[in-house]
Image 1 (cartoon, helix red, strand yellow):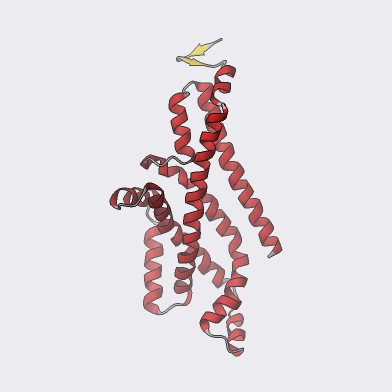
Image 2 (tube, one colour; image 1 turned 135 degrees about the vertical axis):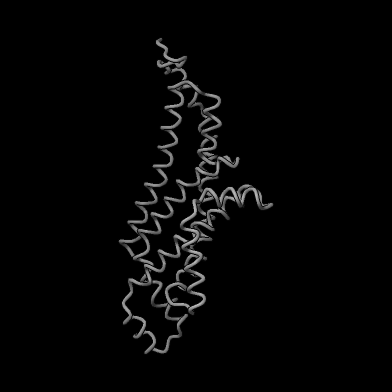
Length: 224
């Protein structure tokens, strides 16, 4: 069995050792944490992002400017800085800190998606709804947002995929999501075949989740 730089290149047995059931379960637990952080932050970001997007699109001048300031500032700061700040400058538990950090960052992106969706609706829809006696809130809730949502599905799905991938950042603050679990296993199984297999497995798991999400988003858009 050949070796180079102390690494075993004939590692069928080593790969089998890595792919023990307990290690696969360990990675799936990390994937669960990844999905928990993603789902929590995306749900909160959709609520806050919709609010900010509506304000920036057509809110009172001061509110629109405040929303614009938040969006522009947050979008031009790396997400990792928010993760580090919330994790180490607040008393929040690690998972809650990760969800809040991602919510702060992702809200700005969702707000821009919502604003774009609202801009895609012809002004005539607003005028027609007003002629029927709808209030501004009623027009948004019952007429504009349902139409805009269809146009927002692709960018929202793209943003969700970005969030899922970017959760890999949180392992640097000690949160054992999928990448974090992978780093732990890499410390235990460090031969070249094992490391290559491990990273291939992590990539496959991220791909499976994100590809499934993108396919689901396409189906939803077609049916909408």
